[in-house]
Length: 402
Ligand SMILES: [Ca+2]
Image (cartoon, rainbow, N blue to C red; front, side, top):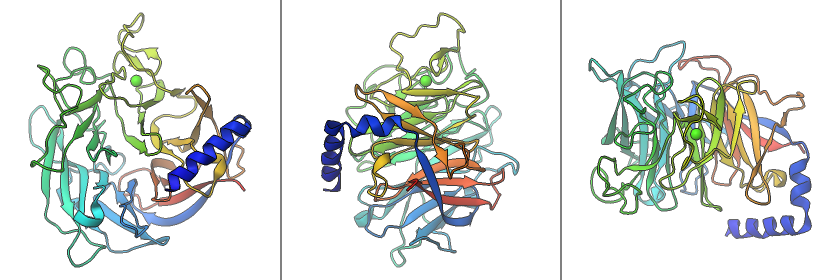
């Protein structure tokens, strides 16, 4: 219902020409602190259960609840003992993803993605996608029992993806990195282009019936030889964060680049997003005259003069900030915020907002991830200092400057 009202507003804005005026003006954002003291917050998810609780997961293995702006001290879930060791200075491993089932209110099912130890001469660790359930007696606690859904072997410590989200189709989408190292030097064509591995992909699985999961019949590579039927899209390097925009049905993904370009993609069924052939809009391997036919180009890229590691965000769908309506707000780990404004013709305009009248788009901290609550408002998950154990995490709400 609320989206129908939004659509009417968008039609009104488009017809009256306010749209183009709004998107051609510089945008100023304000950050409002929601809570602090979280240890390396790397993701947020909100169950559709009417409680308006925000669940933030810490890299070190705890899921914490923010209720009415207050951080509950006791974790909802703590799986820190299951994690592979985290380098205190920097790590891309940990509790990397959390998603609530769309029918969580009735079935209490939630899913996590984490890095677990795995002893093998050619592997660094394994990623586990697992299911948990809410406690039968306490809505702010998960039951400790785990059901493993999927394991993915990881040859290197980095590029582990980790995003989990359900689509409106009730299927679970999973982001996986290319296996790590640099330049995707795995096999002959790299993992991103290899349809016979789960690495460097966005996967789509059905966790609503058969255990541990089933393949949706309409996945793009079902029935094709030498492919993994779980694959929804490929040619990705490290799709650290993606999100669904429910009103448009679009799946937005920030794919972290190698040394030069960061990119944002709209993910389509069966799409090849280019890595390692291309980095952003540029040939990567081979360096010149790379074969770009059939590759889907990003809707935006930026170079390492503007950031270092893209953090996919969300399309703003709240009621409090009409200027931001329909805009994709995302960031960069270096602490920069960016906006993509929708343009007539389906293109996106790259806007560098001013944050808190600083004259720049820098938040003075790291941006680990972003979040969106049930009302469509957008949050930043940040930390002041490096490392998976740093208790300097702050969650901010993002608003337009009034
Ligand atoms: Ca790409």
